Figure (spheres, rainbow, N blue to C red):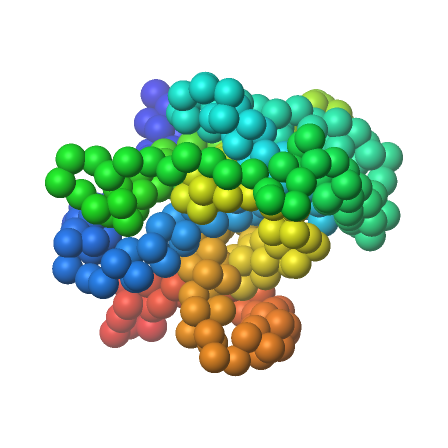
Length: 326
């Protein structure tokens, strides 16, 4: 009985009363943000919510399962254009969003098969080839990408008394919150423990009964589903798609977000997404410096804080929890 209770306690998202207070306070502050800030800041926050979803998917794959993928731009493009075509055909956008994630997930499942034989840089090169191939297919197929004019998608109408920016903010905030809860449940479940076992030592995991085939493919499928949903949300908020939005630089953004935010930490995905979205905004007048900032951030994180921004946040919490005794 004690074992069952302790396991139930371990699965709780928020365990301490004080933690509940500041978490709900933070949620309330974010919820009220659009009512007291400039609309441009509301739009940037919306982009952070959107990018958080795809970063979580990438983190489930790289951080928790240890499978390196450089093909996220391809999954993002598949999700975005699937969503765009379905909406233009008259499919309701919530259903089109789910379908965008599912189609990207199916392609992720197929791309995951090389992970059964390849590891490390070889797997990275194989997934990179997929991302480049997807870009070339969309760039050279006007039927899929809309040609030179691109693909236009009807944007959402403002809800009730909210402005268009506030409508997108609250919608994306809700969706990001749901996917965050889903990610926490995945990593706390048997599936998440199997992912970690595969990452740490796949041979030992297989000896203990963990199916490498099942969980490697599952991690690719779930990661691609997350990224595909982000692609659909990207199409919805921009109202326009064209192939040059899905180059290899998008994959770099995902990798930077995961590494700087914190590998194998769900909250790291949120912080990493915020970093990748905010850095170009802060350096708007010096766009050429953004790649240098990304590279410098990765070097500093790998040397001084391997767990990223989320790791530093956890250490700060631990320090103040034990203060002044340690």
